[in-house]
Length: 494
Ligand code: ADP
Image (cartoon, rainbow, N blue to C red; front, top):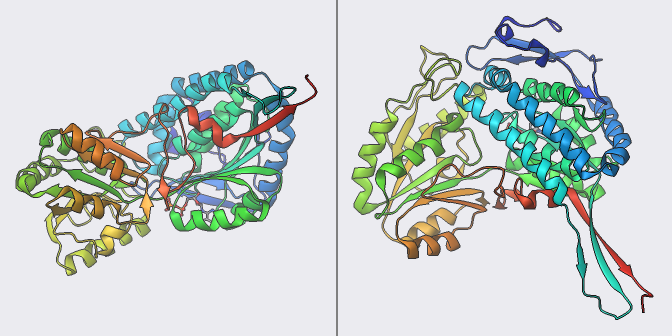
């Protein structure tokens, strides 16, 4: 099976996009120590056996990236930009195949997977442009015979660890900025979804990105790989997207070599509906911000707060809109919610839901697995009477469960919304301009959707405050995480 194409991939236009081993120094490496299985969450079928890589391969990948750094960072911005644009064009050209691979290994509806390919690629084209604008500065000097110059330079080798919920875009959000800045890159994708990462490696080769500039290490021993990526002194910058506990561990590991670090960690997003909101628009926004990727995104809504005067009307509209959402295999036409990633995810959600119901929450819709579809298909669910004391309010649910609470005053809901150690995305709906600015300033979050639920794009700085992380991805600020400022003091000019 290792080098064979599974029948699930038979309908791809370009089957050479499916690879089964790490990509180091421009080559796909046969494994030394066996293989691990990648399954389709929709039906549990075996999709691929991928070669295990561990600390040895990780060190090889870092060595390849270190060797490639001088030429890559020394190329002109226009040269790097042209190669990134070529990579981008190949992603667009192969959008259907990349999306299909993504849905097969991750489960999300094919329409969402198409969206993710487009979204991931948009960072590549964005940073292909930004590469040309990595401008420095000239600052008025402290003495008349001096000149102060500030250069921005590529920081060096970048190591990254990425999660399974956006197997394509979480890599590209980092790699596009890193490569644009002149850095070389080693990524360990999630062991649940390595195929999307390897397809990007195939396209990197075809785009002519030089060997060693982009490397992918696939393996199940995340701890061992993570130890090398966070502690090797050749790595100058470490970037992680994943859960808060793992992020804290990796942040601590990076301390040993004082690396520059970016962390994109978990959230506990509030969604506030004020009494002056456009309710129909709020309902549509909530569906998008809750059920995208079956609720498995770090910016997914976790807690919904609705002001008393519109509570009943909002709830009625919400139930009506949620009930017909189509739960299905992501490849099926019309699918709106796919399976959860694995049994652990299902068990966690069932446990949180049971606890909440035991503590007085009320179940209005869903609440169980759709056994006809399979063990990982969780019905879209709505519960009300949710209180801050319930675990479900304090935990990132990562599933299609809407938790609704009632509130009376603006001050009260701001306190409720901020009552969490995390601060990634938040959302509120209001048409009162005064309230919009008051609430936006008071919410302690890195990102706020105001009458808008779709907030992430390449032009915007994505990131969180508090325990949600460090640094920003995307936007013109996004290069900063991959560059170092160098101050030149030119004297003797008098
Ligand atoms: P999620 O809940 O999204 O799976 P994790 O934080 O567990 O979040 O996983 C995100 C990424 O971190 C994955 O690539 C996973 O393999 C990796 N990972 C998990 N634990 C560790 C660890 N101890 N050291 C390094 N990487 C890890």
